[in-house]
Length: 146
Image (tube, rainbow, N blue to C red; front, side, top):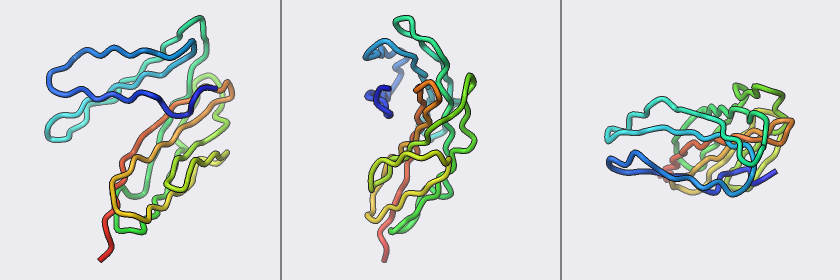
């Protein structure tokens, strides 16, 4: 299995409507696209599966719900990935990337604790029984305690 987290995340600014993505090797990839406007309104998320070099299978679909997006340090965020699914199999592993490191679990729930103020990317992923994966990113803002 390749890296759990994508090596390339892209953001386009202005009127850019085209982007070239180079996939690193043969495999099955889920490509997600979502827009955001100047008022921070999100468009629906669009997703498609791309097969390169004869690869087959359908990757799972990651879904992450957190109980809070911001708060005062130390902040514990509870994570629930139970709405994740796999169209052609089962989810075998849930992955959580927290400040204290990468966690692998067979349980869809976990938590991360943030002790320092700042804005963090909470990366989560699911891996299916074929070794295919899908990831999800949520931003967490931690405020200083007074």
